[in-house]
Length: 113
Image 1 (cartoon, helix red, strand yellow):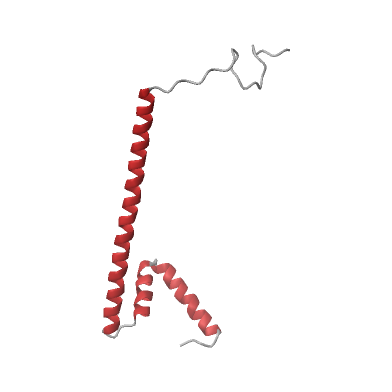
Image 2: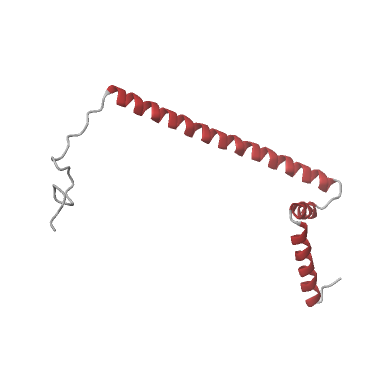
């Protein structure tokens, strides 16, 4: 069987020859510019939102630092407060398992209480 296509396979042009490039109209340019402007505006909004979140994150971090300084001034150990806060976030079963393993390891090393 021969080639069923009316033109050879693998040629980079259509069966009737290469097409001339299309001319860009004023409507094409306007659509392209509007699309570009919309994408640029959306990008600007994402960047500005992210920057605002960075400012808010820094504000919260400063407030947390001030709170720990106040707790320290009242006699609490900030390091232990952070441990307690981290433990409160965890699942109770996972925490209990970790504490049991820690007690076992301490006993094995002669550090049990």
